[in-house]
Amino acid sequence: MVGQASSASEWQDMLSGRLPMREVRACGKCLAYDGMFRDTLYRIMADGDSRMAENAAWIFTYADTDLLPSLPPHYVDTWMERAMDTRSETLRRLLLTLISRSVLPHPFRTDFLDYCLIGMSSSRYPYSVRALCMKLAYKLCLPHPELLDELKSNLEIMEPDLLPPSLRSVRCRVMVGIVSQKRG
Image (cartoon, rainbow, N blue to C red; front, side, top):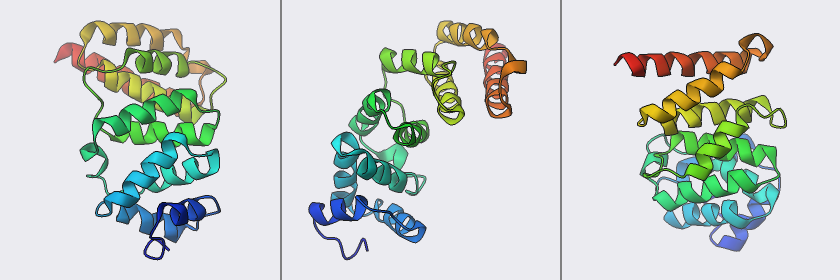
């Protein structure tokens, strides 16, 4: 299907419907060598409708592992903005996954760190989004010892016994990472 779609409108038509898994994988491989396709998906993710944006983000999650860190910083910045603003929890989860696999902009966006700190403890988000917020908050705070202290305080407030196993596991790994940073 990717080979058959040659224009942005054809790609949009493809993304507006249901995508089979083999198409998603094939499209993910194309991202490495087809810059026009990559830019089209990026634009759709930035301002497309929910279904198309979700499909475009889903394809990006199947990109080669070395592609995401090599993308221009404005991709990640746009994904951060969209993740904070979207109403679609599916799109939010996919965007946060992409952000976590990418190189974060330096200096980092404080509004995104605030979003992650609030999002990791907000009961209005699904557990997957909360876990990704926790991981991203750690990744953002890592180079800044004073921010690691703030993150640790926020994590200590979250009672491990009251958390579901998925969040308890991520919380534990982040706490171990913070403690190892303090020692190192």
